[in-house]
Length: 454
Image (cartoon, rainbow, N blue to C red; front, side, top):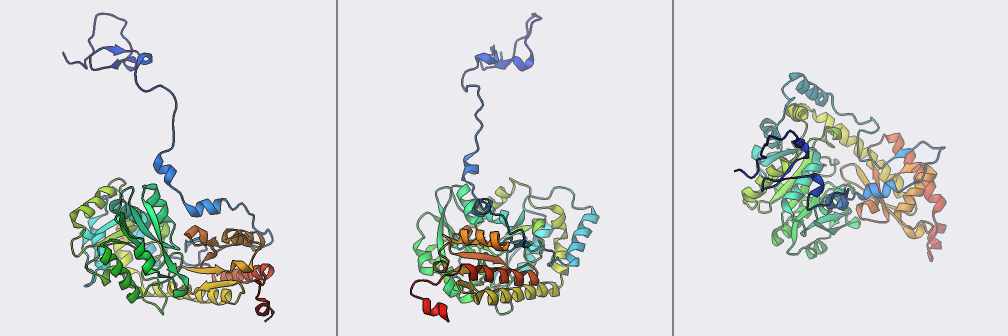
């Protein structure tokens, strides 16, 4: 007889189905007599959740300071270009979304890696002879952050390490450490417009290094690497046989005196996963459409990495289908004037902000060349009442109602980051308040009285 079948007898006192526990011998037992796990509540957060840590949230949420009630708050801390309404997306982009919605074609599930037609559009848009792309080389994601998440997950195992820029976007650390992946920080040099310290970078590589993260243009630095510097980074990766995760979400968001060079166009022998998205260049971060471009002309990744990305994508069913449906018209119909006007505004704000802050004793801004940010060094010896950049920016909020992010959030103390997407009048007012704040708290360093008397 099947040992899992409950024998029915003539007794009318059969237990309820829910009260019967069947074991492999066919005998039933009451719930109170079960062996094994003791019945008690023991709900605990997972190791994954315990390892997940966002340094920006941890620092900002602990800043319990209140703004000056007599001054309107100016937030130069939020990396969202839409916050103040002065940088709307283009009408053609809005119309593309409306058309996709009205078509009724995009209300169902799409493949986890995105519609084939949408991936073909991205491949066509970014294809060039030096870095050819086909639809099979494109994976659509829920924003660029998911693209980075998938790339780290496919390239690295727990116990391995990745190389991440310092200062750098804190999401790399948050994602990697949640997966049990060690983060090693390579230095960017402010005196060289945030170029990579190449010797220090190469010294970090060991047998457990899984990938190198390169963010260009940079958040938080606003830097744009030259072609020659990118080639030097690629040379390190080629020598050490390390693949690259290229975070290029700010690709093409560079000012008129610089040029963006997609990393994959400069090397045929280093495999690169390039991450991008609609968020910043098209000014729609809430639409959550990103992508991974797989560049592997020497077939070093083989099918394994590509198949791994597909499998990881299937854990969550991809980005919004309506935005995917709008992608063709977004890429084809957005006028060049829209891109030009956005960059002209950002460059003007960057120049204004840099000029104003460079004139303030005790501050050392580094001029940006792209993206939406500017980093400012604090000569802490001239502000002895503040222990660090976190205290400096806290007091700036309390006294002047100007909120900048302390660069401790980006692993780079004694700096702060300014977002340059706010309206021009707000940038000027914020810089004026920062000047007033610095003048009130500036002290001559020992032995530099002559400089202070000038």
